[in-house]
Amino acid sequence: MQSRLDKSPVATWWWTIDRWFLAAFLSLMGLGIVLSFAASPAVAERIGLDSFHFATRQIIFTIPALIVMLAVSFLEARQIRRMSLVMICIMLVLMVAVLYIGVEVKGARRWVSLAGLSIQPSEFLKPAFVVICAWLFAEHKRQPDIPGNLFAMLLLALVISLLVAQPDLGQTMLVLGTWGVMFFMAGLPWFWIVALGAAGIGGVFAAYTVFPHVAARIDKFLTGEGDTFQVDMGREALINGGWFGVGPGEGTVKRVIPDSHADFVFSVAGEEFGLIMCFFIMSIFAFIVLRGLSIALKEHDDFTRYAVGGLVTIFGLQSAINMCVNLQLMPAKGMTLPFISYGGSSQIAIAVSMGMVLALTRRHPEKRKQMGYTFSQRTMPAE
Image 1 (cartoon, rainbow, N blue to C red):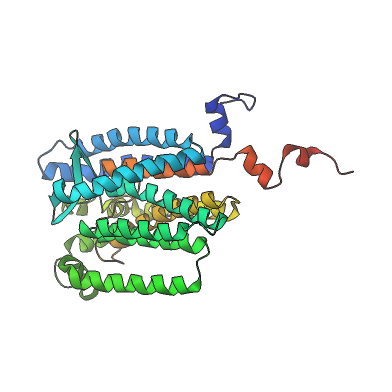
Image 2: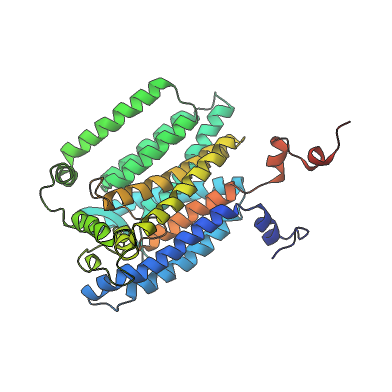
């Protein structure tokens, strides 16, 4: 235990970090490892790998993810902005490169191989995009003559264009929704609210008419016809589990769902550990989002407010989309459950994002002064 009199960087970090956030993130990482042992052996055996191949790799991915999250949480707001600027420049270049040299999977190019490692640039682009847009919105509010809102719109158009070109409509929806929330927090006029809403509806219609796989997924969701095997089996797993589950390792649906260790790990949790576990997982995600938005609303610094609000929004939207697909409330979409689904790029990118949340929500003396809670004000008696 660190003493409050200790002024070392680690001690200062420990006494200023939001330990509720830290506990929630560590809980999700732990659940990811536990559920990987439950969901992945059947998948590994089906494709001829060692039973614990994916579970072992999940642990291997979690270790650097934890290190990255803690390292980023030591940074100051200025350093977060600088890191995000470097990240977004690199990832935009990789997003262009992936269109030409990326690995094609099911008709989409989203992965690029670097030094033997497969990286999904869009995963790392998201937190950097949120932070840079937060900075642009904050600068425009601080000095209205700076066209920060315009630059944020141009950056959004660039990112959306690259995502659609892959194509990755799920990430496109995620980025658009998060950007809209941040723009709303920045106090956009009602004209823009209506315009963005109309653009979103138009974008969905355009995706339905232009991309056959999008139309097929929406049609299958609305009519229930066609290949709905995975979502049907995911829902059946949740029904089979009931309130308390069939027991660890006793699930059967995971043996036939191809992505039970990734996109449908929530269904495996429901079958083996019951709806109680599902509600527990949902409560952790809800706690993170609600706590983040609550802190953002009380924050005096515009940049911190927009950045924290945007980061927890994109985190919450991604988890909500994954769980809704598992519950057959949305068309199937390849969206991982943060910190729980199997995946290296996703784990590290989410760790960076949540490390930023930890860094930006740390309690600093200068913030307390802005809020009027200096030590002398709390201890000096009234005259």
